Image (tube, rainbow, N blue to C red):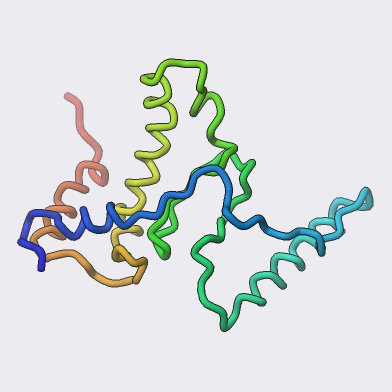
Length: 162
């Protein structure tokens, strides 16, 4: 069990993060989705139907922990607290966030800020409600929760410069 005030549970959660970078191991099959040069709204309707059918087909099946919530070319990153994962699609691994032709310190500033941002979501007011396995439950010791809430006040209350 955790010693009060030492944040061991938070370290356990951090070390349990699944990190997905670039693209999924298994590509999503879009062959059943018809996209054509017809009206845009019809393609949107078909796409919505396709995604709804895909989501409904998951009912009663185990969670696919390898599935991604965004496509590889998406310029974004995300934290998924239910799976305790952070995801960096290939689309964000380009300038200005990452560029193999610049210095490491520039990349640490660019993609490092994105990585740090996603990690903090695992411990923000939403992510902090999920344990290292992605279960919605209180995993904090009373002392750590009190410290977390006290330290978070600097974000809640604006600093007053005089």
